[in-house]
Image 1 (tube, rainbow, N blue to C red):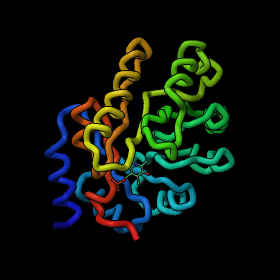
Image 2: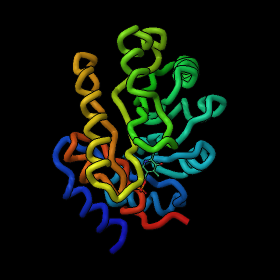
Image 3: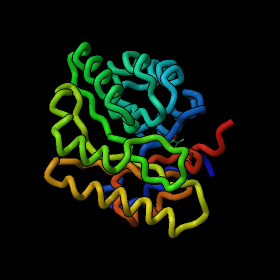
Image 4: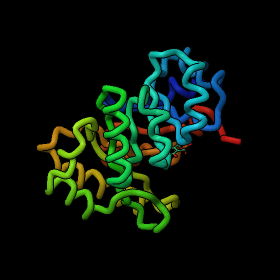
Length: 215
Ligand SMILES: *Cc1c(COP(=O)(O)O)cnc(C)c1O
């Protein structure tokens, strides 16, 4: 099965209201182009250098999403064109995105990454930090950033019950901010997206299942 067929199959399996970010990291521009020609417009990348190399080679109506760890000193490279940053995990980063967005005369959409995995290795704000950010109107200090929602990654495990529990906890947190007009809950990757959707995901980030293994 080729990229087109895999995309079609995945898209057909997504309920209405769930968007697909095709994670193209480590795959060259020609491969992204194949997915583009099959109708895909949202792509996710996790390294700034790779993204800024690929972006000029591809059509300008692509919506580029940044999904990886973002260093503050690299924000300026993607600020002019990035559509959504999923992986905001500190106020320092939020401040820098706000600054660079202002310099570009734009408002940048972001998601706050929440640490939901029971394992200790994943990045993100704690649930308590997220609550504090909303409770104390911390976001008012960043007028050039628009927080659209939350992002989380479950533990890498075969334990379906645990993965479900972690996604459910993020959904529950997301729902407590229903008065904040959030509209994106980014959760679910190649191996766990059906579980994420069952627990309320509105945006899945899928790489391997579309493009095959990364080398
Ligand atoms: C690489 C990556 C993905 C996609 O992973 P697959 O297992 O290949 O679908 C999704 N989200 C983030 C944050 C990633 O870094």
